[in-house]
Amino acid sequence: MSTLANNQFDAIESLIVDDGLRIEALDFHPEQDMMLLILNTKVALNQSLSAFPTLKKANIAQLQQYKLIGNGTGIHWPLLDEDLSLKGFLHSELRKVVKPGKGSGAT
Image (tube, rainbow, N blue to C red; front, side, top):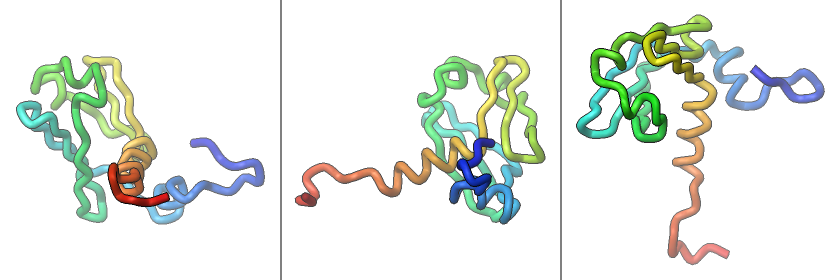
């Protein structure tokens, strides 16, 4: 994980490191372009499989052959040679929340 110049974690890294946020399990629904990440806080993050070209091309058997790495801070698919991080998923979730809406009238 990257750190800021003064060796402080950014807010997302703090959730992961200081608060112990971890991925516990994954659930896949390719027909709905969906991957659910279940966190140790019992929160489910919904990610589009199509956002990850290697995962989008994979069949369900390949998707289900994953390993949690870094004590649940990442996911590795050995058959697909793909690695994704909890930090990246949290960044994606944050973008969904703060993404400006079209036609909102905001200046």
